[in-house]
Length: 129
Image (cartoon, rainbow, N blue to C red; front, top):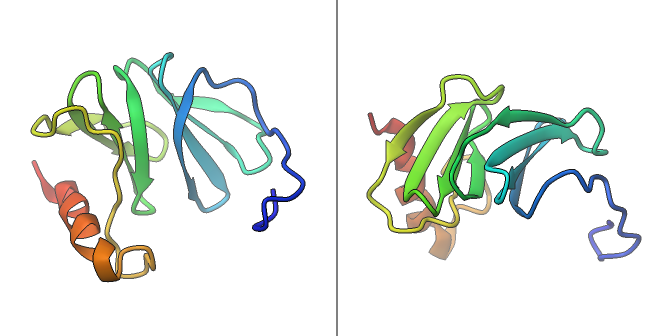
């Protein structure tokens, strides 16, 4: 849809209970809560591919441009992986039912002002383990 909320268009109906999304370059990444998946596709919804499966309750997703960070609220995990889904590993089990995540990068304008400490906290998890 436009930034004014006009002309909404469904680009996919393939994801079971989508919870969050992130755009990295020309790819859209979406968490599928009930299927336990992370799906990547072009911005128009074409070429959807599961890049991760078996995640118990994936909710939030964010990227630093090189890696994905996914929260899994049913398993109390924060998971990182490469954009193609390889290198999947748990980096935290310290948060009960994490549902959202942000990655701090100096280029991320959302991580300023009152959100800077939240973004910094979650962004720092990328260096854990």
